[in-house]
Image 1 (cartoon, rainbow, N blue to C red):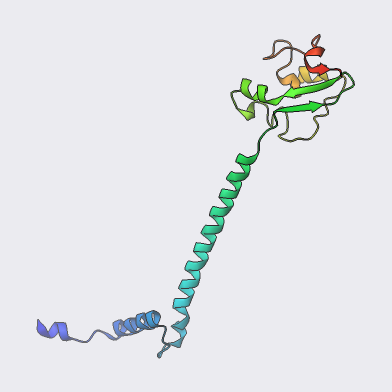
Image 2 (cartoon, rainbow, N blue to C red):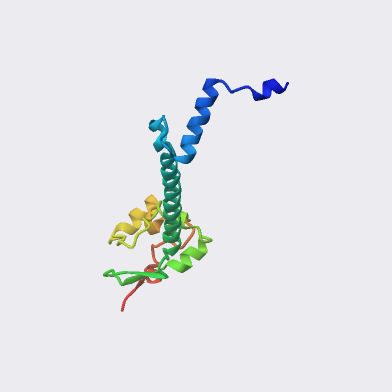
Length: 155
């Protein structure tokens, strides 16, 4: 039994042990090809860490940008019939803070003008688009016909 323990390991195992030693010490030894294996592993670990950090920063920046977007309380649209003061906060409250009720199916989520021009009330009510999505006969809010003063205020 003693004899089996003291036996020299096979040549393949000795070569493998030598490669491990070269990798751990960085010495070239007889197998100079392996001298870059340790730095390569360090470089790969560094790149993984760097990529993970950059990904985390990008996610944090995206979440921060989404949270920073605050919708305006009121939006005023100019019109010949009188300026329309859209109370965004009241509409958000009525929609239970669910922006998807209006955006993007009725309005783009943008500060650009809606271009809701003269003669479009009836078209919008019929198609249930823009303000006409809710402000139509039998809709969730008052219809526009006969209710001009509820939206248009002349200065």
